[in-house]
Length: 308
Image (cartoon, rainbow, N blue to C red; front, side, top):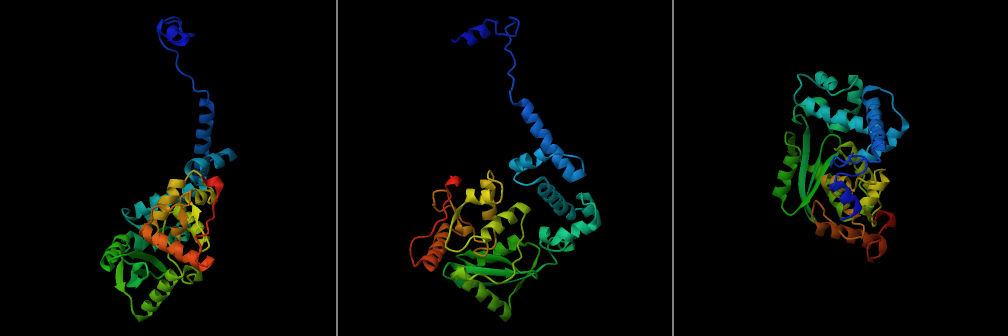
C-alpha cells in the first residue's frame, strides 16, 4: 500500500482533517471546459436568437459538432421545419414554429432542404411525380428515377423488383410513374455513364440530404475518376476531421450511385470497405476506372499519410 493510500485509509489525507473522508478530486481543466461550454452556447445563441458571442465559439463549436454555428442553426431549423410541416395546421404555422423569422427566408431554402415544395412535403411527397425505369448494366440491374428537378435516384442491385421496392421506400408517398420512350433514352445515358464514369454525367441531379450530407457528397463529386481517397481525408477536406463516422454514414445514405461517387472512398490503408450496392460492385467500378485512366494498371490511389 502506498503512502497516499495509507494516509487516506487512516483518515489523515491532506485537507480532510483526519476525518477519514477522501478529499474531492479537482479537475484541473474544469475552468477551461466551462469556458469552452459557454463559448459554444454563446455562439449558438447568437445564431439562433441574435445574442452576442465571441470568435472562440466558432472554432470550438465546429470542432465539437462538425458544423459552424450558422450551419448548425440552419440544419436545426430545417429539421424542425420538416417535423412541423407534418403536424402544424398550415405551412405558415410550421414556418414560424420551426424558428424562421420570415416566410421568405424559409421558401428561399425550401427546395434545397426539402427536395420539393413545402406543400408537397406536408402531404408526404404525395404531390411529387417521379418517373422511373429499370435496365441492365455490367453491374447488374439498375433503376433510374427522376423528379421534375432532375435525377433523384440511381439504384443498383440484382433484382429489378427489389429495386422498385427500394424506390417506394425512398419516396413512400410520391407518384411513381413508369418512364416513356424519352425517359428510356435518359436511362440509356445513365447506363453509359455507369459503364464509363470518366465521361461524366451532363444531366441535372435532384440531390436530397442534410446540410452535412450535401457537403460530403459535394466533396465526393470533386474526386476525379481513377482516384480514391480515405473517409478521414474527406472529413478533413470538408473541415471536420473528427467526423469520419458521419462521413461514412453520408456515403451509405447516398441514393445516386456513381453520380455521387462514394465508391471512390476507401479505408486509410487503401482496402475496400462497405458499399451500399455491394463491395463487389465497388471493386468493379474502381477497376474499370483504373483501366480507363491508367492503361489497365492497378488503381491510382490518392493516399494521404495525415489521414491515418
